[in-house]
Amino acid sequence: MEKKKTLILGATDNPGRYASLAAHRLVAAGHSIVNIGVKRGEVAGVPIQSAGAALPDIHTVTLYIGPKRQPEYYDYIIQTNPKRIVFNPGTENLELEALANEHGIETLRACTLVLLSTDQY
Figure (cartoon, rainbow, N blue to C red):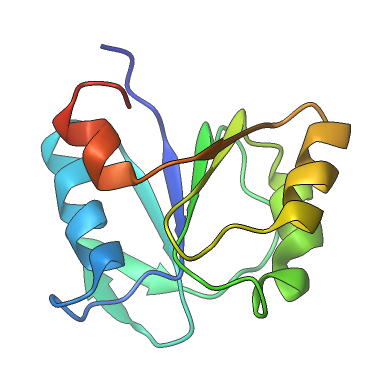
């Protein structure tokens, strides 16, 4: 299986949140992660940082922030130029999907945890 460097947007060190669970499962599956979140901390052994300069070599952005908070990250996501964006349940956003598609970025309405558990990630 191809290892996919994944940016987790909405990362948190709260073990009760799906973003935290996804971080741990991604690392366990051998994928490298970049954690972007509001609060500092660490999850799955990787520091949580704020969005800054666009990052190279990101294969997937997996979203864990709702559509109302996403517009402030549009430019960051597009400049990062991932191969795909996973819209986890509750993060669906037609505007961001259209913007991503305009830039040749695949969009997927799915659950990262389900994709991992069914070997579809």
